[in-house]
Length: 159
Image (tube, rainbow, N blue to C red; front, side, top):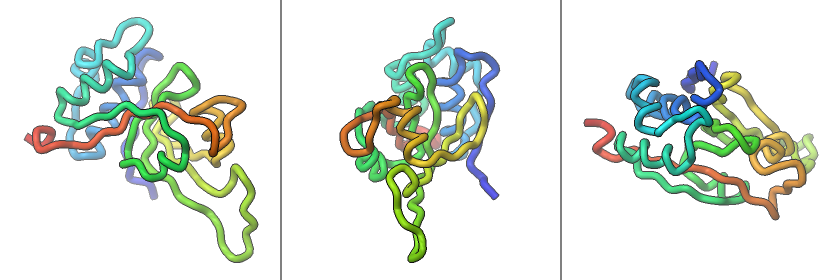
């Protein structure tokens, strides 16, 4: 059973603030979407990663916008917000490695990425699928980088 929070975005422009709502809930705080829309300066085209970062900092998170590959992503603090499919934001909350003595590792099938997607709910991807949505069709885990917003709650968040 998966206990990671998920919320559905009521409108296509609301993926960014909904990701902030999901992460805040993960850390124990329930926030309203209208407040998050305002803080993240959501307009008819959605929110920018910079606006999401600023909103998260106002809520009491320390943030860092980064471009990184899957190896560095596996070392990053989770959950984090990912820029997804060039026009969407999702929350990555877990990465697991598959394998066993009888399983042959093949590229694209050695890791599972756990996503809370405000458009569809909780979903998992193998590495090939994940790279396609995060980086693009020609991505490889060694050469390509995707965009992420790393977040860490500070004492201000819990006040």
